[in-house]
Length: 74
Image (cartoon, rainbow, N blue to C red; front, top):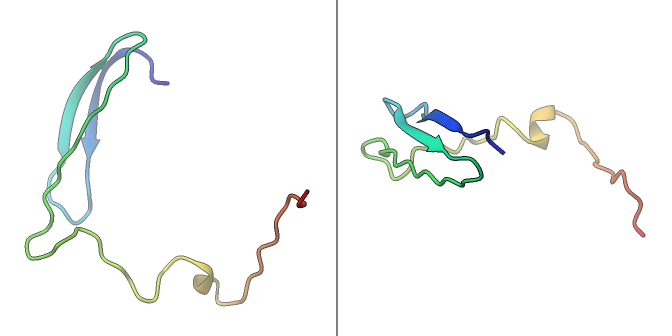
């Protein structure tokens, strides 16, 4: 829950130049929805790049890993 007041929201992505900003006011007990539209980089369909191999994940550890549940099945 966000306290009532006026806020400045910013949306940013490292591959897109500039920042999208909105100033919003939240009333007591109110709700708010804000949409941001960012332009995709020119010549690409998306602003995201998939890296192979992934920098994150189990392969990044350099060794096998077994994940065991901490809660027993009932």
